[in-house]
Image 1: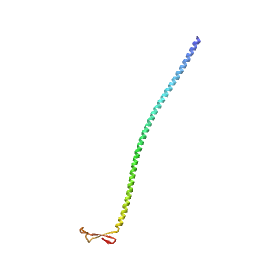
Image 2: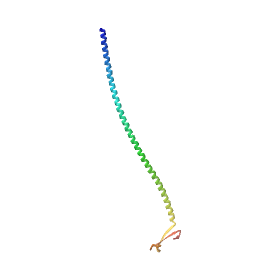
Image 3: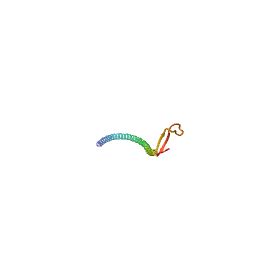
Image 4: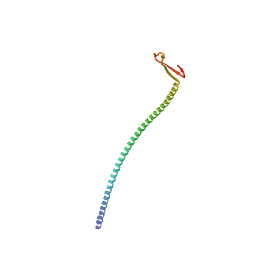
Length: 141
């Protein structure tokens, strides 16, 4: 019996050692689980921060796209004004050339006339004063 009691005592000691060892492993496992949980919480927090940053970047990108669109509209308006001014300038240049040609023609035509004033005669129905005479090519009118 003694040997059986000794074997039971040895088995109980061995079981106690195994339980203590298991408790240490469980305790170590709990620590690993706690650290893993903390790491997952850190990852979740970082992910939320990244999502916030992405949302801010998307908002800024949309604002920039809106600004670029407004700039594009402004450039289109400026381009239309420049085209209108260009067309107006071309029309003004053409009108100026036409007026210059007509002025030269008028000058040429008027150069054939010679205007003189005779101070001794009256002008038809205009009281006292000189009579205007116009000569064209030597003939007086």
